[in-house]
Image 1: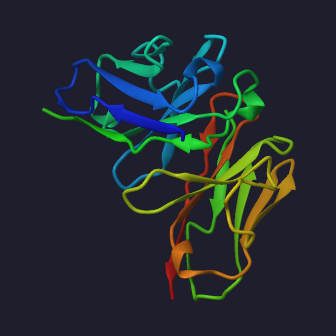
Image 2: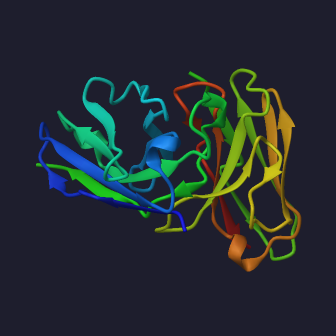
Length: 122
Length: 107
């Protein structure tokens, strides 16, 4: 059974750093493209970042240069390093799996984690 | 970036009604369009991908159509468990983008 379990969400002050984790089971993270998608309170979905199966990464402009996506194949875990946090980064962060690993056109999301809440406030 | 415009932003409907939600993109995306359902406090759930392909396990009352810039999600006979918010998403190019959502409420 495919499962994604996020962790690491906390209350942080503006300017702080945080690392989110997404532990995967039932499949191999490195064989799929994996993304982070966030949802601010009461708002819609916003794609944040992705890592292709081959390791190439991509970011939304709103987080480029501040966030870094990575994975640990030995732990079958996805990460999101978040630096220079801003109030507008406050959201539930979901990790999501795409069914394939290579092509952008296959980047829809067939499995999602339960989400972890990041709050950025002084 | 490809802009996604969903309409309506909300609708009220009764059990048994036929419901149609529209998603329009700012440029052609072929059929690289997916639909998700989200209930309060829960993660989104994939309903349809490639504009019209039903995800495994999703009831057949859900259907999708369209290509290019105009897409629709149809629920043929609304059930109590279908009251939720629905999002479209394009995967033609990065940045991946979502529509603003359509909240389906009970009339």
